[in-house]
Each structure stands twice: as C-alpha cells, then as structure tokens.
Length: 399
Image (cartoon, rainbow, N blue to C red):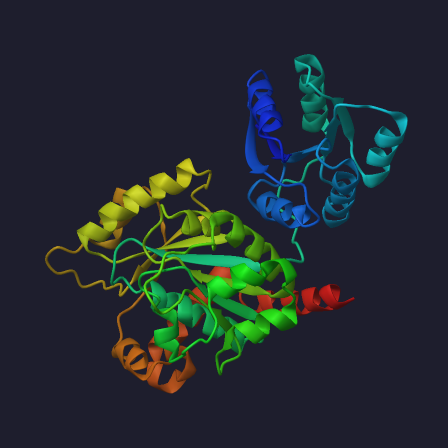
C-alpha cells in the first residue's frame, strides 16, 4: 500500500496533536506539513509542499475562524483542483457542511476526531485520483544555497545564479540570510539603505511597490535584500516572518535565490530550505567540507527532504587531485549521493569579486566558466523552458 501523506492546517496546537496521534493508527500514513495559521495565503504554502509531496491530502480545522477557513479552502482548491481536502469542526450544522462542500472540500469530520471516521476518510484519500508528479504552479521558485564550510563559494554561486536568471528576463530577488557574512551586497558593490529588518516591520502592509522601494536593484535587473551591515541579531525577522515573506515574494516574482551561508541549523535557513524548490549544498573536494556535507545531508533528510531535493554542487571542481582532496568518486561514495554539478576554478571569479560584479556580467572575461555556469543554471531550473513558463505566469498573475 502506498504511503499516505497529509498536510494539516490549524491554529490550534491541540488539534494538530490530535491529528498526529490519530494518524498513528493508519498504516503507512504520515503528516508531511503543518501550518499554524489558516489564512488567505494558505494555498501558497500548500502548493509549495505539494511540489515535494504531490499525492498529499489537506486537512483544515475550521474552529478558529469558520468563514475565513472556508474561504481558504476555496482558494486552495482553485489553485489545486485535484487536491483532496478534509474539513473539520466541532459543529456539523448543515450550512457549514454545505459551504465546505461548495468551497471544494471532499470530506467533513466532526471534532473531536473519531479514529474510525478518520481512518475511513484516509482510505477515501488513498482511493482518490492522485497526481504522480507535482503540478506546475504559477508561483515563483525558491532556490537556496548552503555552504558546508566557510570559503566554498556559496555567495558567489548564489549571486551569479540570480544574475543569470535576471539576464534571462525572469523577475528575480536575491535574499541574503547570512547575518554574519552579509557578503551578497559586497559582491554586487551595493550599499542597501533598507534591510530585512525594515521588511519585517512593514510586512503587514507590504505590496510590490513598497517592497521594490525598500530593496536595492542590481544593474542586471534583480532585486537584493539582506541583513543590516552592522552585526546585529535578526530580532523581529523570525522564522515565521521569513515564511510570510516567502509567501509574498513567490506570488510576485519568478525566482527567489537565497544565500543561506553555512548555518544550516539556523531557524531562518531551515525555514528557507522548507520553502525551496531545491537546496544546493555547496562543497569542495577537501575532506572537512565533505565531512560536513554528510552531516548536512543527514540533517536535511531528517527535516523531510529527499535526495532529489538536495543537490550537491562541487565548487572549484578539479579532476587533478592533490593531497587532502577527494576524487569525484570518493566524494559520491562518501555522501551516498550523486553530485549534481561541478563548477571549475577560474581566475575570473576572484577578478569579479574584486570588481564587485558577477562574473556572468562579463561573459568574454569569464570565458569557459560562463558557459559551464549557465549550463548549471539550465540543469537546475529547466533552462529556456523556465523563461517561457515564467512569461506565462506573469500573464496569469496580471490577469
């Protein structure tokens, strides 16, 4: 019997715990995502998680705000018509049940949940037609770069990744979550007036015009926002804030590129990984980096990622091996994972950092590195198909 995956939306921790306990009695069933708010933007988070779990169902607790929750169900079903939705409340009056069904719910369960009724609903979820692959959504894609140690080139790859996407006319936002390094602005020669702190303070009233007034625009066309230049704690820019911010930017922009630095267990970086279409784990061929990569992969898989979502990128890859360096075969064997891509060393990288511009901005100077890096972006995003799809999404978003 295939695994049954369930997403749970409720502002009530007691309800979420009740579902966790009840699902233990359903063989091969598991919760793959929880949402602590049933808000209008619920569909964005659901679509992001459906990309990782295309056959999942959704359970929505109406008790906190029945009217708002029913509207949230309606928006979710509009975004993903095939999604199997289970609504639940303490009361099953006719008006509420009918409103749920009209909104698109497939099931209605009375609270407190009864094990037999829950098991029957999960059985119907299993029998319902389910997508074997994720449906292409109209939301922008989030790509997060995480380094396994300092100096592996995480920021350089993230900056040039965003630059290539902008050159391809995709609306792109680069977000720096490395509160200590804060190197994205440095590599772009930017001196941002506003930071993620201002984003957090104004997120409740944020629209696209306000956002683009806050952030810095690179000459290549993509937007940049990061931490303050002074060494400060994230303060009110919390994990919850990042998730809310992510739901905003994926509705407005085609691509969001995040430099997560190396602090993978940091709550902001963990949250970024959770909303990402792909996580690029940046390593080099030195053994300390490979050892950390083992630990990072284990951590990400504990968080619910599978190996397809964790993409190992070897920066400064060389076939010529010297002391204290691993071959590609040794690296893959140690990590028990295929390398997604290798980026060769090039003097153009240091030259571009010294000039505070992405190396892809000067294709002639970058030479072979430019061609290889663009091939990496093609593989990571789907290449020209991405730009064509983004054009369609822009039409859909403005329609």
